[in-house]
Length: 215
Image (cartoon, rainbow, N blue to C red; front, side, top):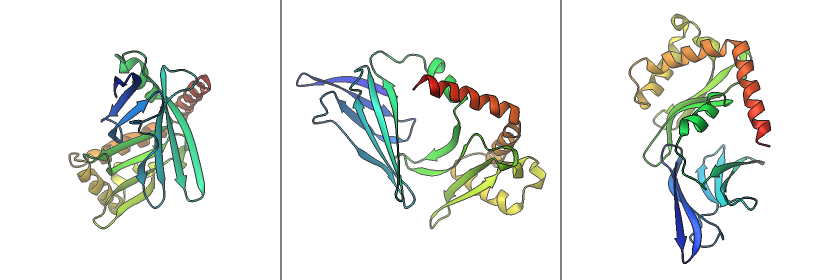
C-alpha cells in the first residue's frame, strides 16, 4: 500500500493506493470528509454479493484511517471495520503484515486483470475439521464465471483425483498463468497441511488471540 499525505487549500488528507490488493483505484481521504473525499464506493457488484467500501479518518484517533466494508447478500448486510495507520512511514511489512497473515483464518489465491477484477483462483476458510475442509475454485468458463466447491481430502492422493476435477483445476491453472499442473500441486500440499488438525487448531487459537487484542 502507498499512502501520500496531501493538503488541499489547507485541508489535510491522504491518498491511498494499493495496487497489490483488490482496490483498483486511488482513494482520497480528507480529514473534513469534504471534496475531493472519495466516500462510499462500490467495489464489486455481482448477483450473489455486493461489496461497498469507505475510507475515512477515525474520529477517535487521526493517526488511523478506518476502512469500512459493507457486504450485501440478499437481505443480509454484513459490516466490518479495519484500520490503516497513516501517521508514520510504513517501512517493514514483514514484521507486521506478513506475520499477521501467517495465522489469518481465510486464505485465497487469486488472479486479477489490470482493473482489479477477479479472473480465476481459489479461496477457503481455515477451520473445517478433517474431511469437511473445503475450498471454492472459480474461473471463467467462456459464458459465465464458474464456481465449484471441492473437499480438500479429494486431493490427499494426487493419483486418485477424478479426471473431471483435474480438468477443471487445469482450466483454472491456465487462467492463473501457472505452469501445467502447478495449481494442482499447490492444492495437494494444502490438503496435507489442513489434514493436520492439531496444527490447524493452534493456528486458529493464535488468530483468535490476535482478534481479541484488537477489540
